[in-house]
Image 1: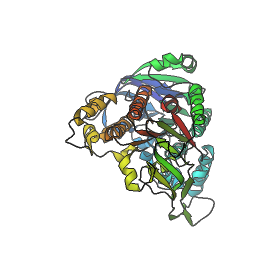
Image 2: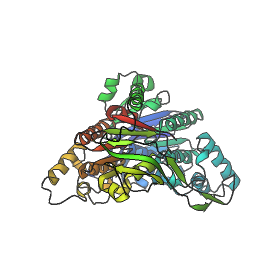
Image 3: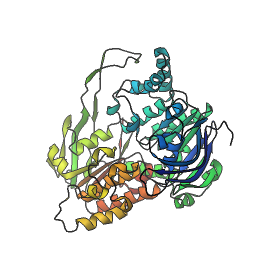
Image 4: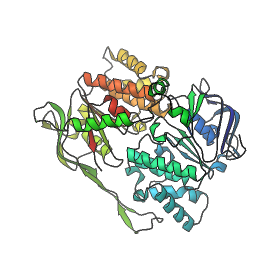
Length: 496
């Protein structure tokens, strides 16, 4: 490998502190300037750990024992001060909330520049330039915690490039993005490559990388087991890709199926169709709060106000049915499902349960929401305890159902670990397990396959189908066209 390669990893093994085994075993990898390399493989195979070694977070932040050599942009990433890599390597994490330092989006884009001591006019120029390049100008000077997950991710990607790094490392960057935003991401990576930036991406959703990625690297059990150039990888038959446990490289069939599901049945049937839940004239949203605009905001000064409202076409959810809810980032999907489960109040209109007007308490009693950010709903000190939380201890079948579900969700080997110590995909499955255990009539899942590989995505789909067979109404908010095509009975499109 050339000495100018932004990534030079040789013979690296890494074991997290207090972990029983190593997460990486004798891994070697190089990434050249202007090259895009994709790390693919099952959840827990070592992709995220390898990105952490490359960007210097392991072992500096994620403590553990590292052997071998990892040189990033000429800096010893394993042993040098991690702040030396700040202007050289930008990072985008699987959960964008974990990398936010500011509540204001403009301030978030400016933060890396401020950290480097740049003058205010240079900071303003860079913020405006990166916002334009990544098409987030409309998201400037917004409350970051009022944004959708996909919008937060787009801001995180822009912030990762504001210093003009030589390398950008991305961990599941499209997990919460809609199709249009994924296209934006695709164009952004093409632009970075054209500017000579190296891009290393750990990703399950592979189709968007066609024509972008130069190499694909398969990780299995902490080792690199196969490498392909783009032509070799994309020439593999779909069945072979599936046999490797990887997501589809061609979404054409899934998109055709989703289009048919959107057109095949109306959202609302007759008043006597037995719907568990129905909406009539529903308007969802939230009021704003006054706050001072960022001083870097070029247009306008003084107070701004965040507010959102969306009129929802009348819809019905029926027992025994899996309904997909799809639409652009920021269309109000999360706000809608929080309203349907009683966590937010409607601005107007009404929600009917079994034909009768429902209040928030009744909606909470019948519904269970698996949130997009599952960190907000993990409370117990073990995975096994999380699946039992709130359950009736006198239920004689409780333990047996819980253990079966741990096996079904591939969580048996981490059943005694604290949920917050798990990977993002594992946390997602724990929250889904809680939904499956609760036995409620309405199960709502907000992006349940974000960060999941193909086998676990299919397993989640099969579990949702089992829930529907048992009479639950299942609503899935998703951008995952593979999930919607494979498991939904009907898809409701939500326009922005």
